[in-house]
Image 1: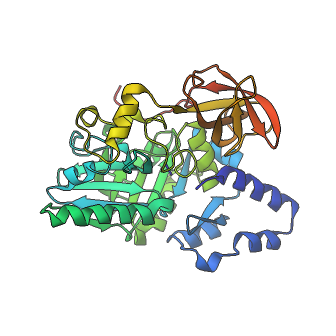
Image 2: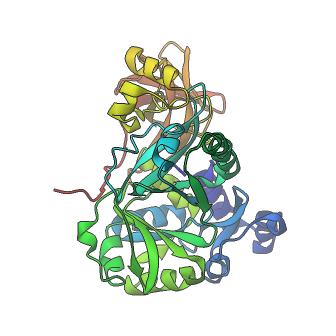
Length: 408
């Protein structure tokens, strides 16, 4: 869920730093620094060698001293700590917060048990995706959700517009935007083991998509067992004044195995896990069905509708969409966003939305959309890169098996 081209940008920066004068590169990357927002972790990133770049209006680390390749592999083998405080956390409260939210998203929010959550999609009147979001039912009167940094303004305007209409008719719902909190993502096989040192709560009883409010490093935090890498891990919402101390404690308890990791590796990790990046793999003209997220539309919601664009989406579920999101393997240089996909006769059947070289698989991977009927795994395709065609094939995702922590 969570801008585009980060992997490519990171690789470009790595090459430039190796080849050119560092002051020149620093000037290039920091050209609009004065206009960018900074998380409370900014000085900590810089002190630890973070290479800062503009992203969604923020100055964020694309990588640290490790290459993006090494950072990706270390996350899979040990773990990574990401600052994702640029993302927007908010709470909806009130006795009607669930029916209100269900008008805007496809999830069966009412059907969630307290303390559990789900990926969902905010839709528009045509069934297109406004944004994807992880939502959690804290209680029947409190929903916590996180939306993408690049979508913050439009998401908040969309929610506010519908909230005003809802409350004007007597609905009981209010919101709070958690700008006082920071968000850290701890991901990888050592995540739970390391975090357990910092809390008295038993993390083995918290499963994928579960949510708790608990003390971590002596501070009340929101903890969600989720992430954006395909690995086991957590997103930790912590009061901003304690964010740096928490990051230091996590790194210290890991004895160097968990490393600070930037957005470049975060992009390659999510691509290997087959996860959508809003603005690349989902847009306002793409429905959840076309994006392969039909599973996120609750059974009750399919029967009742009641969300924006329901007529379009439910018709696609019944009849099948005209396009489908798929994975690709390809030869030649890595495919990039907007690379054309052709059938074996040279006819256009779709395009790539995200692509790169997989550090784990040591081969090119990509995802994108093709016409229905051309979406089955094993279908041979041609991927056009800089005017040349290269052999490829449709494949299932994720490319790298996910390791979410679920009840056995």
